[in-house]
Length: 99
Image 1 (cartoon, rainbow, N blue to C red):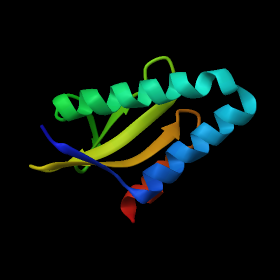
Image 2: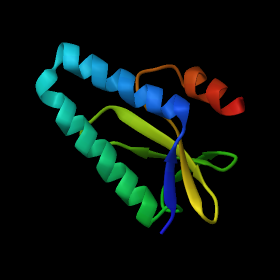
Image 3: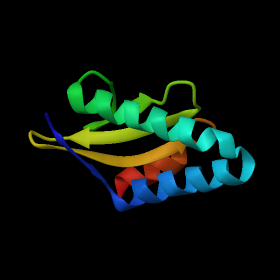
């Protein structure tokens, strides 16, 4: 199985989502984190399964949440690049991945 590395921008995304849930829907923070963990587990087991969207970047939707996790993987590692709300402009995640 691949090791997972959550990049600094993706970590900031996760923290921002948690802050938003804590302020708006505190009871949902744990549910969101569980969905995020399930997505990571699934990507770790089957990194090639999910939609290839640009270059070597793939995405997986978080079940029951309007968020998508973006990642890329190599022989040894999965790098989480970002977590974005599905209503955010695609320009936001696309510009990050061009950097």
